[in-house]
Amino acid sequence: MVTTDYIITTAATLVAAIFASGFINMLITRRYTLQDKKDIEREALKYLMRDSLTRYLKELVADGEASDADKQYAESWHDLYKRFGWNGQLDPLMAKVRELPEERKQK
Image 1: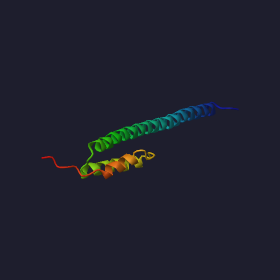
Image 2 (image 1 turned 90 degrees about the vertical axis):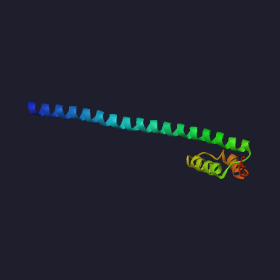
Image 3 (image 1 turned 180 degrees about the horizontal axis):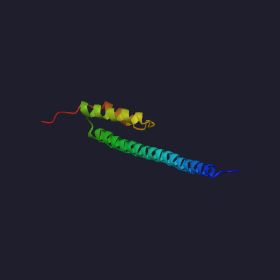
Image 4 (image 1 turned 30 degrees about the vertical axis):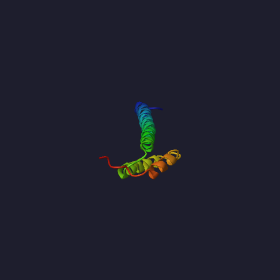
């Protein structure tokens, strides 16, 4: 024979399990949603950085000269570009910047 206490305990256990399951599901969904957002932000940052570096390198090459500071700045950005895992498309442009003559002092 099933007692009232047994029914109440079983019902409470089921309700607690349902809430716990929903809570765990919410936490997992939230974690992956936040991870997706971080991935999107990282990808956007990667493309913005690549675009900025491309423009900067092309500007230096167009000027035909670069100071040591300009070259060091370009090297730092290029190293970061490579750490992002890009495929090396900017390597030839960076090589041109490395070969540029020292910037002349203006009088």
